[in-house]
Length: 145
Image (cartoon, rainbow, N blue to C red; front, side):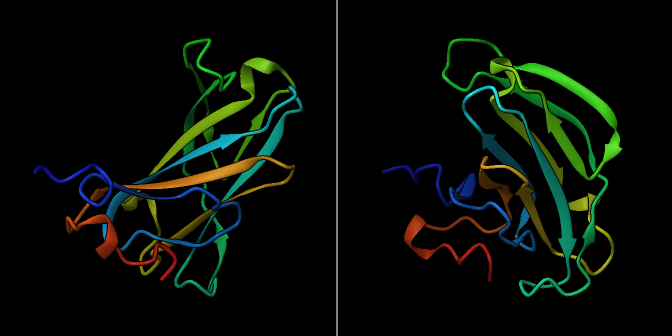
């Protein structure tokens, strides 16, 4: 039987708002965010040296992100900005969902952890991708360790 995608292609933490995620064994991370009600939100990206947040600082790495309603009724809309540590979604239904990606190479030297934090009530799902070591899902290490 072929290995499933979880553990081979990606690992995920569905409740990752404000949680430090280790990128040591991944090529990058994709953040999947959602806030219903056309309320808009601000998401802030930070990097740190460890899971305790040592040396935490904003990471101005987001120059492109994608938005849509989040209910599969519309296509993604590409949005661009000058590289920043924040993404601000508009108070519009077409921006309820937001996706942004960070490559491991964008982190500062000696930094291995990232987190994305919603200033509103938005949910953040962290998906590490391009895993260096492929494992069965039950053998994946904790993402924050």
